[in-house]
Amino acid sequence: MSEPGTPYRVGITIRRFDRPAGAALQLARDVAARLRDAIDERGVAFLAVSGGTTPAAFLAALAAERLDWPRLHVTLTDERWVPEGHPRANATLVTQTLLQGAARHCHWHPLYVPGLEPGAGVTELNRALSALAWPLDVAVLGIGEDGHVASLFPGGLPWDSAPAGDAVVAARAPGGEERVSLSLATLRAARHGYLLFNGARKLALVESLDATDEALPAAAVMAGRKEPLIAYAAEEIAP
Image 1 (cartoon, one colour):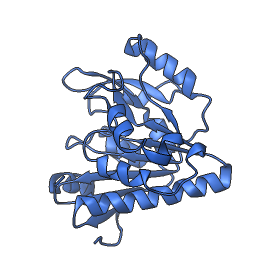
Image 2 (cartoon, helix red, strand yellow):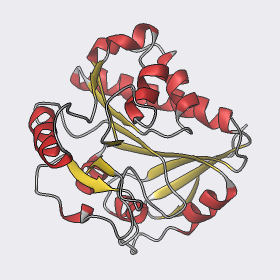
Image 3 (cartoon, one colour):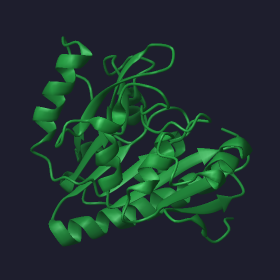
């Protein structure tokens, strides 16, 4: 059971759910509806999803939705610079949950280039992804307790000044792990933006986001969007 969406500040609406499973299922239904609309309007849809553990139930539920999967392009909001199949790769989660059954027929665009270092990899990814139908129709983000989204971290690499037209930027986690991420401009430009998270601490953080605090990546994404982010939140943390 969920509560109706509550607007907190310009740029964000929060929907609360009793349990994470309910949030994941409703988000899958809502994202599928947005993707169907995009396919009806433009003949193609473009989705970016996040990694970690929280999105697993959402991705599995989305895979069960009825969509014209061959007309859907899917990428990640960010990735650790490790190959698909690596236990820390976000791509591994996506292939094990979303890219199943009929959903395997979508066009999958991982954010990793074998044999290249991250710097050269970002250049190649931007070249390859430039042919896709930007902007994203849907971006589904997680959020960290430090306010990071995708792999845009507070005080990290200069994620807010990517070259114009670059969808992907180099990133680095606080511990030094090399990553790549969709840029701030790319996330802001997504037609529909969602946050999916669990736990009271993250909920309190999202409730306090101030669109004027652009040093915090989550607030910076929120501040520059034409449409508000919609947060799907469960205070409970459970599998």
